[in-house]
Image (cartoon, rainbow, N blue to C red; front, side, top):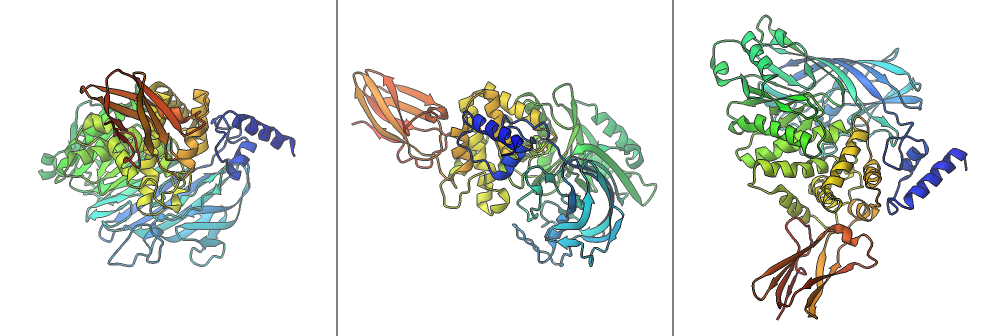
Length: 626
């Protein structure tokens, strides 16, 4: 056995003897520990690396035809120790091709041709995108073969392309009105090459969303002069594209704690241009560094509100909303987003907000991207609260953290679902989303096709994907928080974020960081909740009174550890309660515990459980005394 591998092997064996001893570690993760890119204490390894790129993109949109024409110059940096013999480009719009594999139904009156490349240069070589045998199309991926990129070197790519933006039925983007577009998953993008899987070859079929490197973007978007553009990154040329009146209000909003109507109803009805009218088109310029993606929205006749939020650590965050004048529910979205930013940055996770701005664009659905959210406007306030808080929370997971949501959606959607619950209830108590997440999880728990969370997300389809990504992990995180305690949980979560922001954390980095911070073995919890089939179920096995003491035996009928909440009602109408966190199951040799109540009053009734504890079978949660 080579000395280096022997040392790593002994380290892992020693570590697993006290921590995460029950967790299965796949071979590719073992290789990462051997190569020192990951550490068994949850920290990035001393030889951790990741690649990145610089994108310079120019976009022109024909609003009559819906055709987006683009060109881009890319510099891709190989920071890995490997010699790369190919490049993988993602051609997301190919999901709209007639014969494409999709997780969602897509119907269009026109046959979509996907993304058409008219120019492709890589290094010193030019390619014919249709006939070159060095190119392999595999759906939404394009593999450029016969390339050599040495470690520490870079390669320049130049592309020109176009595609037709889908209509309102589009997946994650679309043309919602003749003059309203949201554009995401849109430009030829270099896939991720990482220390775990090498090239990410996962096809984009709709469900499996996001996994990108942290790149630098410089983007110019040209549109007719009656249209505004809102996008990821810093807005670099407001004086060139905004009318003088709108520019003054925009600058005011950048420094205002009070809401500023940058484009108001009066502005929409006034006989004056909102944007520069010196030419038929305007080019809007945006730039951002060390960010994982770029999206934008385009609209005419939209209202525009803005104000600043306290993003923690002395940072001011520009929060702005862009919406149709008929979307009454959107009027409050800016204030809701401000509250979300402030609570996230100060309370849980309690990390300063990652970005200098966030824009919530009135498009369709609920779709997150860095600094941009694509939101429908609902008629019910509670659902506007839900969507706003949830999508803003995504700024941390997956974007700040660089999570591979394609494989581990529960590390992204699950955290956003759980962290949002507390803010949502603070803003609107119509629905207790923590309770709702328990009930939604129970809709799926224990079914044959409920897949453990460590199964790759791209393998899961339909309704069960929602449970896998949202509901089961949200419950797991809440139970983890419950037995760890608020202070320890927050400390561990913050340390995980501090270690891995701007990088690519894996599930094991999460597991091991929490164990490292708490100096505790948590495999007894992680293994059943994240790796195994199973469901939560506690039962009252027996109860009796002996020597003025009520003795109650609780058995764990299911596989997943959950808290024990007992309520005892006595003949005289009095009530007593007992609570044990899920850690009560940590060191038990058998799946049973006893809980005693001291009382000289005869009990009448026992109830097990609470609205915040998922229990798949409640028929065994009651005990009546005669």
